[in-house]
Image (cartoon, rainbow, N blue to C red; front, side, top):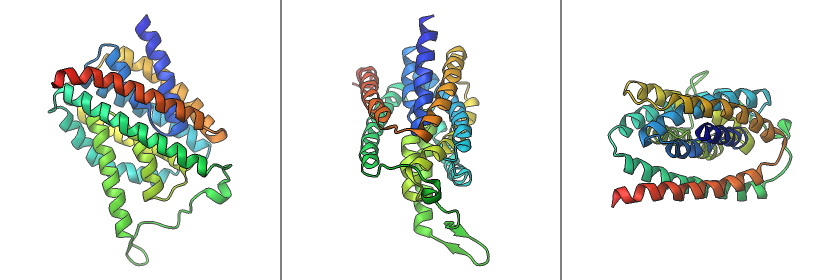
Amino acid sequence: MIEIVLAVVAGALIGLSLGALGGGGSILAVPVLLALGQSATQATTGSLVVVGVTSLAGAVTARRAGTVLLARGAAFGAVAIGGAVAGAHLSATVPEPVLLAAFSALMLLVAGLMAARQLRSRRAAGPLDPAVERPGLDDPIITFSPTFMCQCPRALKVVVTATVVGLLTGFLGVGGGFLVVPALVLALALPMRYAAGTSLVVITITSAAALATRAGAGIAPDWGLVVALTLTSIVGSVVGARVAARADTARLSAAFTGLVLAVAAYVAVQALPALV
């Protein structure tokens, strides 16, 4: 009973983070599944289910709110599939203590990215005006008609970034939202709030690719816990997406940064004894 209650509470937080901030859900999903008795491999696999399904629900809600650029998200996600498949294969060859240590390091990186994002958001704070801030769709990176044109440095940046995000998704069972959001801002020049919504499309695609790869390896988490996490996470993502469209999420982001740091320390304590 306690396990289900913990899964429900954690699922709500995961969904709220994904819907409102465009990422961070798997940073909670993996440690929660570990705390509920799953192995590192089971936890990272179960996280892909939770985060992938929740991101899809959040993307639908964000699309209705007008904060998703579907074509750009789908293109970025398609490029990331190769990395996701390679990362999923690689995870099966790495000892679990190494997997946990890598996840802890990633959490520290995520906390740093979140803190930097908060500082940028405060400096550029202001109401969302779709007529002004919505990026135009007439600036493609590559075109073939009427003549071939390629913004090759920008295209290379997109390919490298998407591949790295895919690798992290497949290897650690994370959606990579807090890497996708800055990538969409820098590589595709999306305003922050559109990047958060569009990142949900990318996370859905990469999580599905990584999960499909792992499915053939016989890695099965506790599906009861995964379903409980997923259902409550979906509700949280819908609420979070609506919050992101109407309210300032700075306080939520700051609180989540502190939570990520605390969970990173917890995972590191578990991993380090097995490494030394």
